Length: 331
Image (cartoon, rainbow, N blue to C red):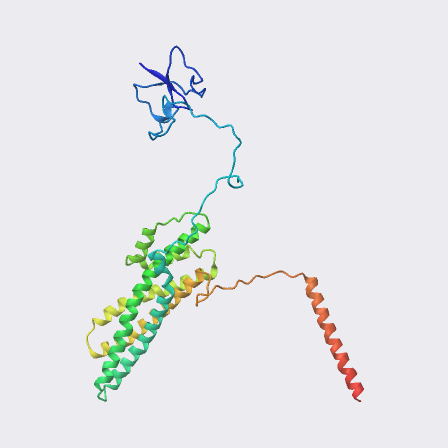
């Protein structure tokens, strides 16, 4: 059985003979608690820890102890208290999700414009159908009408999908900033937010819940989110009605379907615009993306108001007196 004591200064190991000692015979350093070399001991029971050193390090077992220098220390610069924490201040490039979140405003604006144009395109197609009952419609006019409908409807659908992706990215970033500012942890994970916004049926309820968690202290923002929630659910209901209406046979049903498409495009345009308004409200910005100026109400003492009223009445009396003097002088 071999029991040794390790020096805390020079790392020399000294066998324990008789009883443990306190000071190292070589460098007068403190000896750690005795430990057995043939039995494994966990690190928390050793009283020391092994540190790997390079062969060129002179502080090895059996080497001469490092001599201390007692000369006056010299500094190349004025010494400072504390540790110098060098922080990299170079700008961090934004991630792909952040770049997508920055485009949510233009995408929603473009979607609202396209759906607004789709309303007029569908109404124009309905007018052509009504006119076609008594008059033959030229082929170029039909081609232009069909192209306008396909361009606005398909373009609006594609831009809406991109805007939805950008809105989810914006929601994730906004929730992260909101809870970081409040020094709280987000109770919902990023994957939970994405699933709640992407899975059908769930995306009719959960996006509004996520937004309400951000505006719970803003009554106006809460009202805007609820209004947007109503339009969002109503637009989903209209899609179901449109799918049922397309299954009905007959020319009149097809004509009524054109009017229904125009109404659906109108609701989609309003929903896109409301989405942009809600986002700007949460960001404390105008609908153009400019920061809103905060209005601060300052209480004014009653004495100040009374003094202002007295000064105003005095000014009126002085002006009246001056006008009367001018009239008298004129007479």
